[in-house]
Length: 231
Image 1 (cartoon, rainbow, N blue to C red):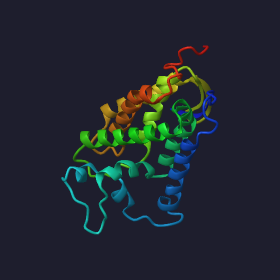
Image 2: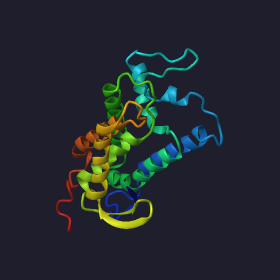
Image 3: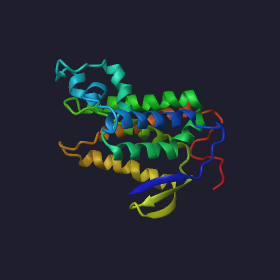
Image 4: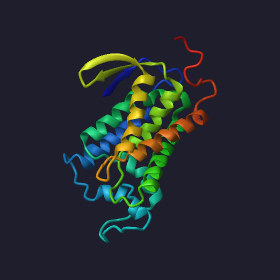
């Protein structure tokens, strides 16, 4: 297992990745304040703000005392909730290491739109491929998967410091680190059982969206696949 720590990929076009840092800060703050149990109680928050496919397709209904948000709103709100500390930390760590360079490649506003679109695509993939699921989909994993796919398309040869098996630091190319992660998502889709509580199809949907959208969102002077950069 690779845990990313830092990449060797300095920013070129933006002075500071305001949007990426803002997403990390807002997502972390929401978890800390409303979900961690350290401050305020957030009863039924996952049911209200998460994406529940069975509810979306009218196969189930929420209890009458729980507010049901329009599906369009939950396609964004679910991104800012997480199921636990490790769920939050893993998503935000990948976003911290790789998101700034994607923002650098397309600009602040475009990056925000890109991130949200990847999240929407992830939720739609999960809902349509598991329409009977009653578990609320929450977490930024789908949008982060889009960022990972974009990074692979733009910077496969950039070196990344990672921890292997949580203890061995190594400097590896991004295509190996992120390619392993992508391959693991497809493997998990193939092996997932009915009781698996991870939304693997959301990851696949986010990956597909990120790979398809990055050529459209990047600035024209940003090459694909590190073309024109020294080896």
